[in-house]
Length: 466
Image (cartoon, rainbow, N blue to C red; front, side, top):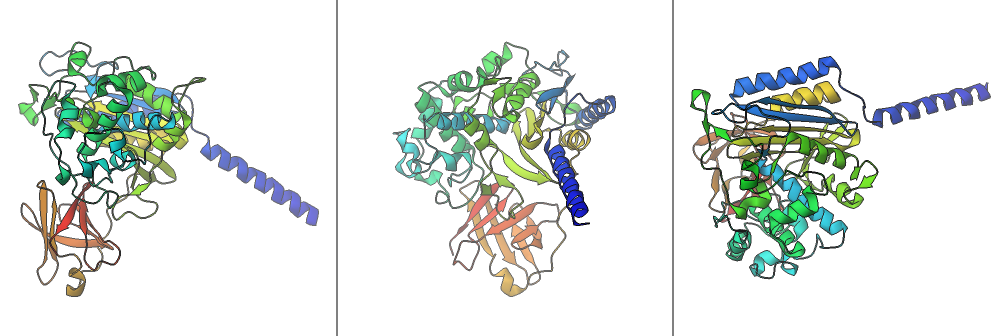
């Protein structure tokens, strides 16, 4: 009887292990006709609803491109169809490219992620020279968000801008808090320039685009515009217009200016989810890919399994699946990339209308192709604050001269004042939501009775005064 039990237990154990292994094995093979139809319908519906002229979509599953299709037209004026090779401007998804180039250099011993940037950029302000590349790439350097102080088409524009920065480019001590910062990536791009001895645009072509087979991807608008490229659009309804002139500023290249196509982005994603391999050929160091799909900075207010930021990507967990993603907007364009490294999968979406990132289509693909659950519902409201609890949060919070929030107690609830007064309803410990759904999180430092920072929409504001 004991032997029967042992044999049965062994069979059950082996079956469990096989099931677990099968669950981790990425799905492979082509999509079903029903899956393809669902994706196509979702894209067409969302383009129509948003009034977007054109888009391109790629889906990678099991390390292979299983869906690659273009929609609509490159320009509302000349009606040339979009193709899978049409270039779109990516916006902030450029940051993941900058981060990957830095991780590639670090894996090859060309730079260190944890040494002061003054090691590479000698002419930076002393206060900025103390930050590290890891802090810049993970938005924890304490750098303020700001518009570029230099407008230039010259490759020297990036270095000239950084040389002009002062100590007030930092709004918080390095390493103290997460806050999304384009300037942090501009400085990271300058580090790459100095390490490789070439302008950022040329560096990216030589160390990333060419090795990955992204021959037409570029940072330079004149190269994009003389190729199969889309025009950016903005406006609502019948007021849709081509953006003129196209934005061009070399000082902004590392944070939001790359051009690429759905086909080349699919190739990029395929190499990444295969661990840096193109077939049997290693294109990216294994360490660089591992770090790329690592998120080490909890977003303010996030629990241990909630959102974290790594290197140009936000990590989330949807059901049992870990995803890494980022959206991008550059005037006239929108993009969103989602990677599922455990499943060797990716979803890549690009459009030619300002701010349109096809989030509904992303949800349909994630559910239909990968079986991911829908995004979680908003947190329910927690019990209201007491006056004593409210003291921990009241005060004024500012992010340099970009935004200022006042938080006060009206005798019943907290009220946020910026461009108007908005009541705040508590949703969790130190977390609040306005009636229109905007989330706010207060961040405390050890030993301090009042909040030090107020975080919303990836941006963090620091308490002013006491």
